[in-house]
Image 1 (cartoon, one colour):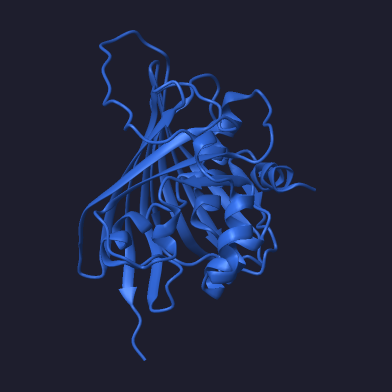
Image 2 (tube, rainbow, N blue to C red; image 1 turned 135 degrees about the horizontal axis):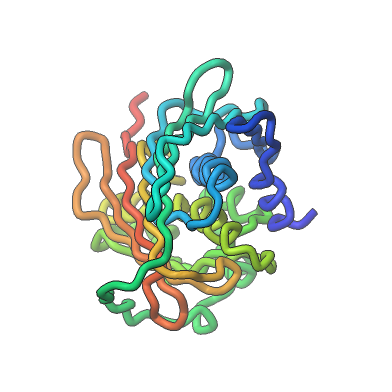
Length: 285
């Protein structure tokens, strides 16, 4: 299967009972489950229990690293079914312990005031080198961890506005932008696009905190992990079309980095916002 087909398979949870679902992890050799996968699967589980309104926000906490060799059980608590808003709580369980918990809110469409922050002026994706071009040009000079990451076929294509930040190790202002999209077409179901974006929203975000220090999540002396994750959906979008993920980090300290993200469609419409705090601990011998 292609990487996108495999991702859709990962998001296609098995229903065990009315509010109980089972998910699997791709066998890619990683020692722990990718956080975006758990967020995406938890949103799938919550969405399966809601009839009608789409999700507009989710807030989750990572409590234990996930084991990719074991299935993940998602238990949904139907907290409230209102006329305008629906609330769900999801707990992801492995080996008898919670590894992730999430609250999600669903909202029926309403008319209201509208405004948004403008999309940054950055090069368009067709003006940036493709991942294949970067692989051919830069992979021989990449550290082993980064090279092994780029060697794999992945469901999300990334085009960094500043790809050299992973190579030269120079500190920069704590913000970055990257274009993202799936590497293949997705079905038309809007819920799938939301769950795929939930999966992708955990990618590259902690690097917005590390870029100020000339480091990345691939650095050998950095132990990095997502601690919590919040995502707000603003407008409909397609995750198989280019989306600009612009990120910044207002603060880092106490071995934690706080990061924010805004996700724009190519048209300039703000379609989603993200916030996350993550562990960025310097390893000691």
